[in-house]
Image (cartoon, rainbow, N blue to C red; front, side, top):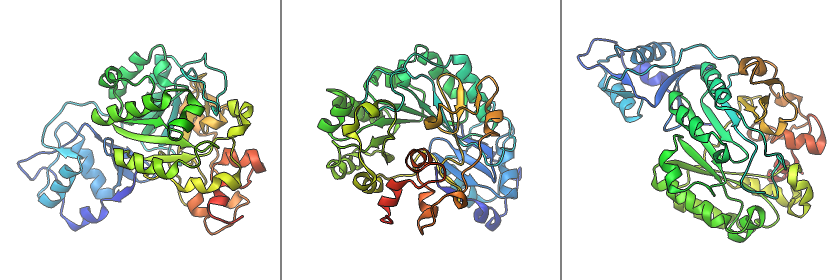
Length: 398
């Protein structure tokens, strides 16, 4: 989740008055109001969310209008210009309706547009599906509903999203939505020509070790192609993040991977451990136990792709849409849908019950930091309400 920066002190410190200045200001194309639990303004390009008090909310509503807004306070305006929230250029941009989000708000959406893939990774939790995809019409419906619910970030996943037979059509609709688009890819198909066409804000590439370990999992030659894709994406101006899964063959690579990714300018590095599902069941030699793997969850850096709130477990603001149109609380729970695309996101969201930390078997001092870990993984190991033993090992409590 992006850090939350409160503009309350700035607004109350300075006297903000609309239309008392000869210079009018307008929202940039990359800034949008979001009415979450707290009214906020979201800077899509920077992936930052700024909480607003009542006065600042009213001010920014004027900025989002056709006539714009003005302020006598140059320090406040300079701050907003520097942050990429305001501009002096008027633009006739149709913005989404401002409607208060449900509580808890749905901020992050996993959108699995296809379960097909160009690789056969040995740890893939999807397994050997690969024949189902959402239609462009379904994708547009989902994105429209997500934006209406004040969503922030859509995670475009697969399979491999780039193999979707209508990816070009889906890609062309992305600029219509005031949400941050993050493409999850193995990078193999992401050449320079594809990058020129791509209309997303961030690209997350899966890198599961240095070359021998990565290729052991994903196929010969895939490491070099993924690394080349990352370099080309950075050169093209995209934010690039990396996702790494811990397995038996990459355990000696983490210090070197951290040095590599930081040296390249990778925005975020997420490290996780695959669940015993899908193809991993047939490749058990890759599996790492909590005792072996827990410490590696201490690697990684950045803000991550979603977060929770005090008192709640993982995924408070997250939901997933699967390639078959089913909707679940995250992609791991795809086989346990709570609704469908046909019935809508709002209906499905109302059926998802947030995980309360007080209901878990966990009671250690790290609970608010850990958030109970991955609930799917914890349930596989210990059942409902159980501990994520990998996180327990990370914090040294077992």
